[in-house]
Image (cartoon, rainbow, N blue to C red; front, side):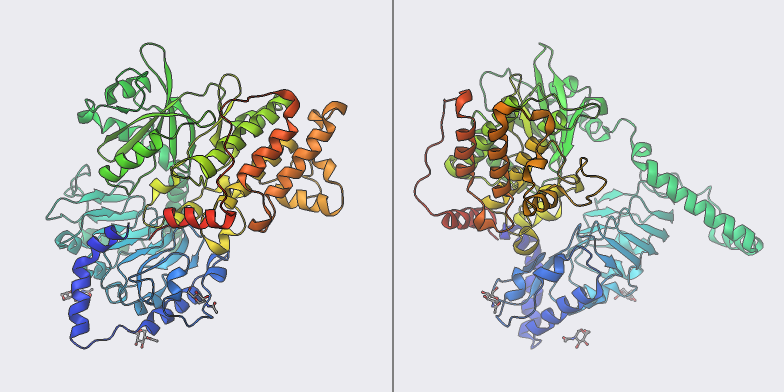
Length: 612
Ligand SMILES: *[C@@H]1O[C@H](CO)[C@@H](O)[C@H](O)[C@H]1NC(C)=O
Ligand SMILES: *[C@@H]1O[C@H](CO)[C@@H](O)[C@H](O)[C@H]1NC(C)=O
Ligand SMILES: *[C@@H]1O[C@H](CO)[C@@H](O)[C@H](O)[C@H]1NC(C)=O
């Protein structure tokens, strides 16, 4: 994993070595100073930096453990990459970055940064190979000096409010491979690149002269524009212009996704030339397939075939010619190479358990990664518990069966599967239900695929809002995925099952209580009113004690301190004991885990998964 960034930066490394041998020092204090000033200049409403970036330490290399910070060497305070994506950060572009003088990668995407990109940015990040400022609120023009960041491979400025012309100097950049300025308000002639570059100019007001853009001739020249602007003096015109731009932005904001591609399957249509690619299958029982069969079965991945989407990707329903129904997941962009991906798929394809959704096969075409799963006719637990209309029809017996089966699947991933797997995305949406309402966990092993460089950070940071209610509180401090983090998320699912409430708000107490489900439970517990939490539609004399015991297990899982939570194996045993009289299943019981302490287990898994 380190290798990847190592290779892409090796050229720069040589550069640094040269500079160092010429007597320049790369003081590590400057990098500490850099991070201090970055922290100071950004507003951090979610307190990600507040807790993780703790400067009360003089150990060499301590900043390398900070959230989003990658160093050249773990024992040296010298920052290689800074990845602060999707943290709700506000403020201007952090100029303090210039003191991280060995920085090669900067990712500030999906935040609320505003103001202009500094005109002297090439002095601030002279050695950057990758800059991602996409999905912010940056305005003003793209500075010419960005084209002077000589080593730049990837530049993403999409989804901002940038205006003006794109400096034509970008066309001459020697190393640029990907250039995305889509969804801004840019105008004028686009740069002509000398080499093959993946460009995206889509959704700008008036760009011209590039691939799939109008030619520039018909446009009024700059001097004409000046004349027009000069003639159109007057506040009224300006105000109208302002209104126009505001309206344009509003309209675009609301509907640009649809405008861009009404079918939502442009990506699939672009795979035309690759239809003969075979789907690699793990199960002999499934008949051979090509990509063309998947395309046909999903109506070319039409929007109407989408049956779910989450942080790892979008799931399509696929109906084969013989009537077989499958689920095809289009993965979110993965940074794995084809070889790494194939090897990872080989591992996941061999992970089989009654309570896991079987991965039947996968397919790689261009940059797309498609996973083929067995279909689960009863959808996911979230839909069943919180239907769009009406109330859930899941009775207590079914809910208990689902809890026990899902606990078993997750316990198996944690304790018995080889390699052991931390799920990291447990929620009621990833627990799927077959025709008999037997639960099957989906999405296991996928968190790692999203971003192999900083796996344990990425799952937390890239989380979509919907899954927030499931994130264990310690992740905000430790940022390391652990089995106990999964236990917490699973506890939330148990709470959903027994209360019928959603994780993020409590409908039952909407009048009097504003917090989330866990906060509500905690309050009830403190007031010894825990019983009030139970979904009334489930309550009956027979099952009262089961409901209450179940609720207590759920409460243990969501303890704020990880150590106080049971292991998944224990959760499974506790739930199974509650459901003892129902004889749900007896086959493939989980073996008692080999006697290693729980803390050892965490280290083991973290070492394996978070290695970088
Ligand atoms: C930070 O960078 C600026 C500009 O290169 C430099 O003048 C200043 O001394 C640096 N500060 C520290 C503490 O290294
Ligand atoms: C300082 O950081 C190092 C490395 O992260 C850590 O091992 C050590 O415990 C920290 N010391 C203090 C006082 O926090
Ligand atoms: C970019 O680099 C060139 C050549 O070194 C220099 O002439 C030019 O002034 C620089 N532009 C900016 C905006 O820094």
